[in-house]
Length: 384
Image (cartoon, rainbow, N blue to C red; front, side):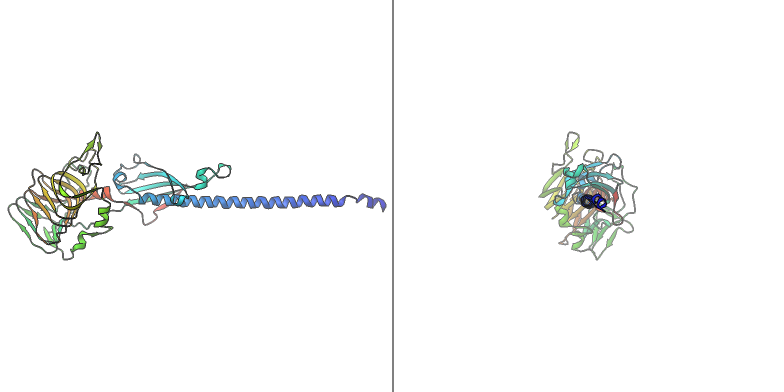
């Protein structure tokens, strides 16, 4: 018995050491599992943050979209425009990517988002998270309700060689237009008289003149998607009332868009100013006496057109439209004209003052000036 007891000496130490090893292993395992859980949670947080940054970046690109520079690009692949690295709202991270034009009205925003820690390189081991989303957008044009060459609230007087033509016309020299579509009525009014003298006349489809009792003040101030005031606030050119002569201006081979009297070049659509369609707001009454312009023209007062002036696009006048002489041009207006004529005075169209309905001019003006919006159905997708 003495030797047996003697052999058991030191067992407590061995058991204690073994227990320490086991407990140490359990603690180490717990720490390892906790660290892994922490890393998984941190990675998940960075992934979700990065995804939020990418989504926010895509939406911000829609909000700050510049129709003047972005809408008139060629289609994919030479259309790619880089989105520079930009800080996301609230400083949550940084996004960057590309914008692609997939069709005449369709755009793809490819945006990559990185959370703040990843972007700063502060993550463990240099690893990080980023997410990429694709947002399909389309041009969201304003519905001006143009259903005639001339829409007015009052009566219209035509004399001389004045013509109001509701047939869908393609402006001279414009080669990128679709074939002419269905024509519109020549004059759409609230019920006023249309008088013709000399060689003046009105043509349209299915009739030359239609009386529409639904026309009221709102017809000229409230449209589908915007109001007159909102359009005026978006104007790229703002002028006070007065007499103006507008022509395209060039800075070398480029179109000089800083000149307030440069309203584009509809007469020579292949020039550097041929794709420049500004929104022009005249805060008062104006007289245009040469030579041309294009885009969307907003006039707070009366508009008096003289000589051979031509405008391509949409014209909205809160007062009266008056013309005198047409010079050598076949038309003063290509597109659609809405003249509020609030005081119900007579619209005076004299000389060679032709108004031609042109769906191509209207479409070009809308494509160049309209913002974009996300597609209603499945507008975005996560890219990998």
